[in-house]
Image 1 (cartoon, helix red, strand yellow):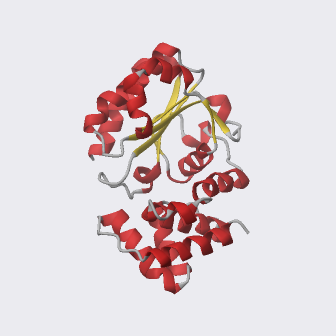
Image 2: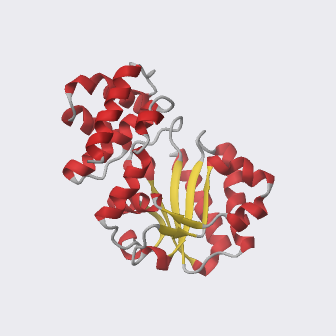
Length: 250
């Protein structure tokens, strides 16, 4: 598969850059869940190291992604580098020493040195990424996931996925497919403790959420999985978002 071939190339380059400090390279997100779409997904991975990379190493890691961009899916990559002591035992919100996504592509091309110097901090989203690693992650190299990542408390995972949808009533106007499927998967976790992909969240929602919303969820799922044009009544979408957010934050 083209996506795995590209990630293997990146992993090999990262191994050369990081040397003995590299503990492992782990794929999560849609590729790990088996619902990756070259047209609509990004490639998500975590890199775990013993110690933070040097400034020179950080710049080299980002250059690998910038150079691979022309071969990547349209949404590109989402990558975080974390140290072992931040993920085992798990810390929330989780510290990271470097992060990259397509959002920052232009900033990296303009001034990579400044970007790599300043891009560090904590990220609540890492609780969700690590939970997905435990549930479905793929080890491209290094120690097994269960040996590297500590258990993520349910409260941290829930806080992480809730933060994605707290503004769903507004966001659904701009990005309805993402919001609809994310609301479904958050409810799947709240009601049944399920860690779901967006696609599986949509399937769960069709079965378990009010039937008046079945056409809405089905259309979002069809777009996400097969690129079928999304057909959404704005009023129904707004009502869906408000009702689901109300349940999630009760």
